[in-house]
Image 1 (tube, rainbow, N blue to C red):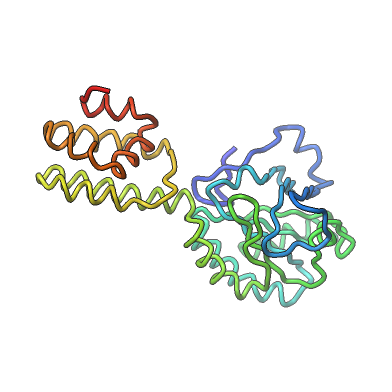
Image 2: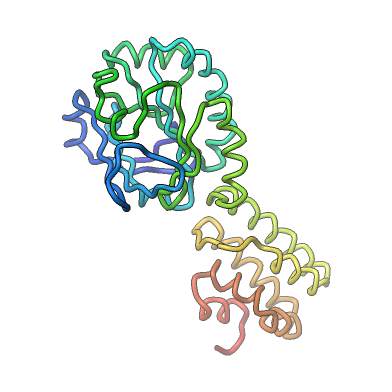
Length: 274
């Protein structure tokens, strides 16, 4: 099930009908990849299973290529409600870029929390055990004051813990070292378009330079497969010298291999012998 309320074009898994039966008993399971602790800190690596009130399951493996904001709050918390417009703004800014948001409400009444969330524009999923400060979630994370936010990296490592007012700068800093799949996709799409334009203009070396400038950690992404094939065909159309120049550049050839899925596919699209 695609969950556009978490992030643009990102889906987290759902346990189907069986999950819907436990909406009233929403819970969070936190398993440590390091020694067990009751106080989540920056640098800790987590394995998460977040069950939300709308039946979603968010797990650490599904964070690959993305960041996740975990926001502890409550409707009865005045400072929390003061921060809501700021977090809504961050959500609108960064959700399309691959940053997921999930709230952990320390309310004691789920329907009330959901009504307030809807009124205030809080559209991201919520975890709520309806136990206020007795919530095992708050105790497991060592949260004894709210509002409080966490930023989780693509491998489950905690990158930030603090107040929402510092969340924007934390996200910006994290994206520099952990660009999401959406950001990488945008960068690669732009580089491919530039390279194709250079090839069409006969500037093969500039086209290769554009490919050399692709970001490290290039993802194998189905959305980039078709544009990469068009670029390979453009090199093929440009002639054997263009193909030879591309293959001679190890960085550009490696990037194209990743985008196309295999060296064999690259060679086939270029019309070159494997």
